[in-house]
Length: 174
Image (spheres, rainbow, N blue to C red):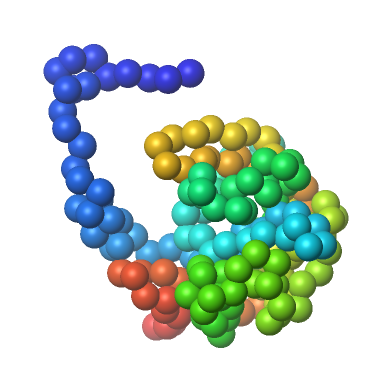
């Protein structure tokens, strides 16, 4: 279902992309790797656009650009894993963000990965792993919104890696 605002609100112009990007840099968010596929078809990327959605059924929401290989892998496999990164995993976040040149399945070479319940890659050392079956998919502009129904979860102790104002940071208690 698509909602349209009645005039005159529907006629108000959006802010430009750069203004929106600068504003959203002020929203601190956790950093995760979303992955799907098996064997040589594994694909993954770093995301910070992820949030819990509901408890009944337990679902989360993640947004991924439609040009990403991971976007295609999720649609092809019908499921995905979310590995929330720890504060000492900045290098891994940059690797899966494409900042060190590794592409496709080669991104998975520098860390220990498990095969989850769904046969998808999940990071062994993540502070939280959530495995999801694809519950819903919706296109909005340049991105796809994936709603995943969580079928497996595990956590371990550790401080989260956080994205704030374009930099990867750690939380300090106090």
